[in-house]
Image 1 (cartoon, rainbow, N blue to C red):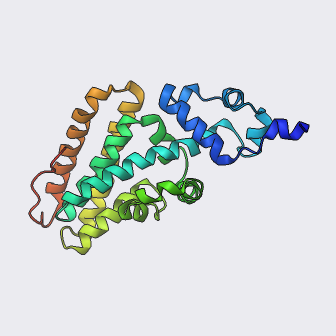
Image 2 (cartoon, rainbow, N blue to C red):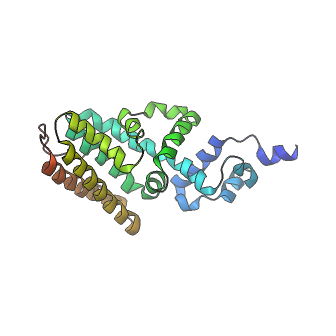
Image 3 (cartoon, rainbow, N blue to C red):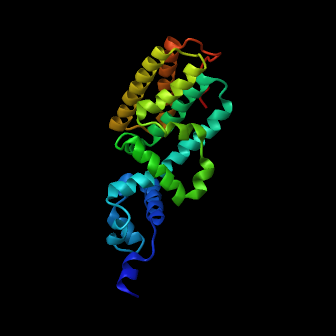
Length: 230
């Protein structure tokens, strides 16, 4: 066997991402190292560095797989949405459920890197893992077209404006206050940690706080009363 064949073995970018994701699911993000992956895949660390600039880049792509659970949750929830406020609150419900369960992944994907990187990386991810294309969700991909965290939420506010459910100025206030509210909840989860059994309760508090803001700023609730938390 030639030296290069022994070192590189024909492994692909997808192979390394899949292995990193496997380790994350079994042991957590802290267990992923370039040296460990090279050992388990019987290749050199140089082989990994052909495809990734650093461990952080590898982790970023491995954690993109966690968005599949968010998309699955959106697909299940939207079957029950009846009006624009169901959609607005429902998207936050799905997002917070996954973000509070996987704070390290969501911090890495949505806050440590800019949205342009996320949009480009998602396209590349689906090319490498085409089997996940069936998990696509319209709301999810619409949100990725905007440039930042608050911008993604404001796209949801625009739907409410177009439905005459809220005025523009109040939508701006709702957007700002809900995003800051989420960041406060999320930072607490990141700093203090949270047990799986407590996630539902924390999400419920967050959603009920959002609903208070919606009732404060909405022009027309469109029949909305309370989000039906599963």
